[in-house]
Image (tube, rainbow, N blue to C red; front, side):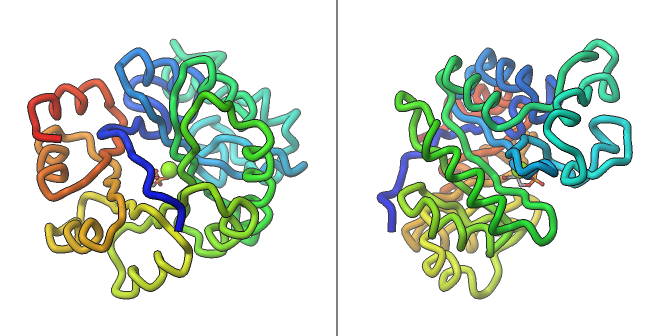
Length: 251
Ligand code: G3P
Ligand code: MG
């Protein structure tokens, strides 16, 4: 297993996505401005196998058009406005590729939780292409990225392609076989949804020797409770508010 990385108490979800278009360069800027030191973002592939940063399978919600991300070449995706549908004030904010995001992380000094969000049937390819790219281009002055996924085949591929990068086991709730799976996949962390989180599950993870990250926590009281239960990191759309909420909590 890779040595346990230290994770920050707050990770900005899809950038500071409560304040700017999710998974945009502006959301990275906003996260840094609000005091976040790490961000989480989602990676999938364009039709021509360029790793791009986008959560949904389609552009309907973010770009106001029905196309699947996996059906468009990067040259087409690069033109997609992911700001206007959210708020006309964000018109002109474009869907970024992984290279653009990593360049901005380097400039801002932000660490990252890279979530592999493969299009159905593309888990292995997504992990391989994204992690080979990261292996060649990740800025030396940043901490190693933490690679997470809901997709078991993506984590298996990550372990093969980039065995030295730390991996996170991502789930809505802790499944019964989580310990065997997290160990088999060589994960260093477990990332759980807050809504069904119970103290016993949080303690099982931390006493099992894993870092614990909880998503997507936008309520300061829930964030404090998760920390009291042992969470290392709170993944949130509102990093400024959650940083402030945790200020006086014990580390
Ligand atoms: O990685 C934590 C969180 O982002 C997982 O859910 O759907 O927001 O990617 P989702
Ligand atoms: Mg995500």
